[in-house]
Image (cartoon, rainbow, N blue to C red; front, top):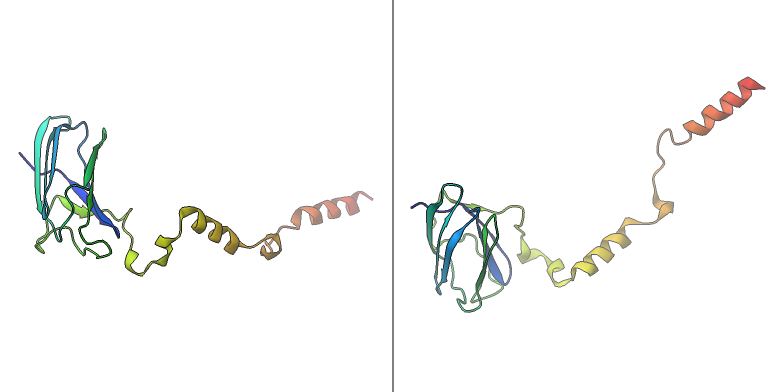
Length: 157
């Protein structure tokens, strides 16, 4: 039995962990107040995987959930105390070779007031900040086509 490769990221209300196991079977995820226990059989070689994590802070086991896909098992651990940043997933500062930060989803939300805005509000704000046609910069060579035409006409006359 070996640990499954996993990546994690932190949000204001929850911590997310994705166990990267393709074609997983017999998935078992146990949420405890200070611990996560994950096991499954998966991969092309049907290897048994087991991960046990002593968590950095407490979670709400009843509100924590997991979802299995063909490529991974995604866990959402609801923080017992929302709004508190987790600098790491584990209680101890030891480096686990199977665990990494999910930088694609990582966000420094502590300083980010945008999280209060909805996605639509952020999109609208971005569109308003882009400006209109009058704000477009001049592009070098944009008039070349006309000048070539005018040169051609003058040579033919």
